[in-house]
Length: 410
Image (cartoon, rainbow, N blue to C red; front, side, top):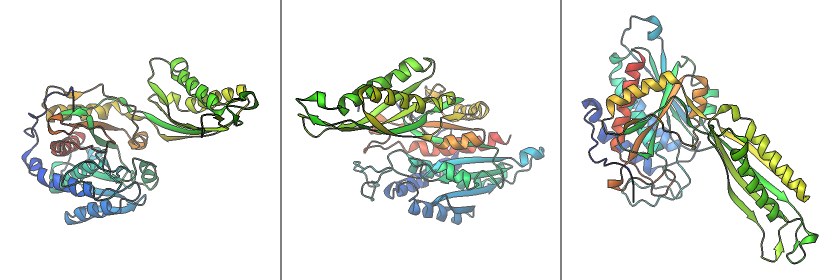
């Protein structure tokens, strides 16, 4: 694969403390076990059993069956702190567990054993990192005061497990004061961290629309209402929303990814079907796109005498980091990452994440941990059937989480 990434072969774990470096073989083992047993959203039974088994072995208090397959582990620090308020603080760490409906094409010993399901986004790595963090913190409770909650969340890829976990009370009893989470990121090379205050990932909205015209003979169009023409004009008109209705300073995108109509070249189709996605960062635009999309569809249909049925829904809000928590993560990452690129502050993506719901409830930071390594052919993009990542990132993720815990309670 051709890549502009710098040489990542020199990345090592020299800045990772020995006790976490020694966990690297176990982290790889856990991750590969999970990779072989991928499960879709709200079906993560085997994954949850594996996580629960490890937590029991380590004597970590935890609750299972939250939002069907979610787990929350609680670790109480023993370190005494002169500030009573600090002693009572609660920091949460979130990791998602679900896989995708993709047939894996990798020829590796740990490839998926579940036909048509694959960890093609790194959630197996997220779960392994969270387990490693839980193990380390349980063994070093004298190194921090306060309480750590580790949230193992189902269904990030859809329909979304964060919101039902929040509704089930995972941020309460005791109340969480702040939250952090990471995403292994093959859009960045191993040895980098992407962190920024403000919007990191986009809000995600989707729509399906069916256009109803009147079919007929391709040689006699005046007797018809051509749904193909109507749908084509709608697709073009939707592109004007970002170009002419959104402030150029605000990033946004409207994509029609599916358009179906017709059965034969000389038959004018009576119906057409389209579906698409909308992405944006600015929460001010939350109610704007739905209204504008329907205005355009309705206007074009009316001009042609067609009708329509629109189904529009919001999936996830924008993932917006608290500035203070982002600075905490950045300062920690600078002490862990040693490659020339190091910490990348201006990283953003139009991809969405339901970590956004947690960040709406409490201050927090979601960040990217670079995991691509082209020299090992580990740079395929997320959701690709050959996706895989450099497992060197696992211990780095544990180190960053542990240092964030220590710095949060300082």
